[in-house]
Image (cartoon, rainbow, N blue to C red):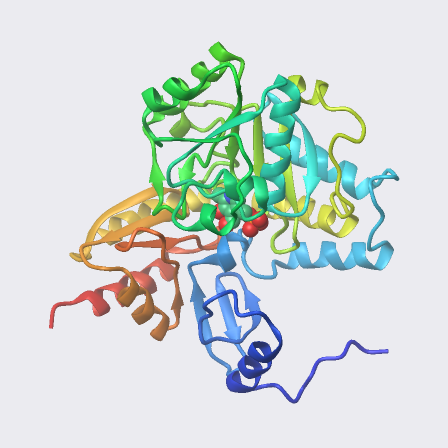
Length: 401
Ligand SMILES: Cc1ncc(COP(=O)(O)O)c(C=O)c1O
């Protein structure tokens, strides 16, 4: 039996109409039917080619359909699609070993789940178990996901409102202001959780010594420090993780959470934890059917291997430098924020028309909750030539008439 694809729906309007007819309209979509991808390119059903500087929501770190990842998934699929954590698995053992091997030395164990929000829920749960306390401090502008506990930890725009009734015990501190966190960090606080670079808030970073100060605050008061690295992890900043990096004063939290690029598109999330946290977790404290499934694990190992073999961490740093330098030629750009390939370009005027004009020129970028900030989350293999295409398009779009 051959897999069925409905060959009747080939044009943009056919596919869009079918999807709109049968899928809940929860996302504002681009007018594109994505059919095929390779590296930084997305090919549409109409035979068009788009430069993807958004990476499918920061997921396509290794580039679209990286051959090494695709092959690993296929090989595993032919052996065993799935068995749960009730059995041992070579694929799971190797993925956990590989992930821990690229993490800061203090983070020695992995817990696998399916998404970013789930990783954050489990991280907060572990912090509560490890401390015997309930409350969690998170930050204005932070986004942590859409399930009950994570959305309650999200102090960005409308999200907490959507998640009502919120889980109790979530406290908002001012991002980047250590006195704000210090004033709230009492004996009921189990965890301080942050996106070390706030992405959806418009790519906001704190000073390097802020991360150090948060680490010291947590050590002093017995609080678990959690980095939500769902966006910043797996090479996006040009380091494997923000944790342990120079930009964050080499600070290592007690838990980091991952998802997005970790499986190159196969849904997978993870928490990486210290020995101390792992010692407080017993059998049955955490779990999920699909966490650690073989296909996801094969994708994780192959993703990390591809990042290494293709030299993508170095590529992020050198290409970021080139992009920043080229952006100085664009008078409409007021500032460039972030690190590596998590960049926020602040314009002097609203970003939405620029986002739209770029899309008209077949370049996909992202917006943010900051009206003047355009976000770039491209595959880690972006090259200088592709940067040139983007900058030339920006110059043309923003040139004064
Ligand atoms: C920083 C951060 N944390 C958590 C999440 C939630 O991840 P997921 O959509 O996989 O649940 C996201 C998603 O955009 C995110 O950007």
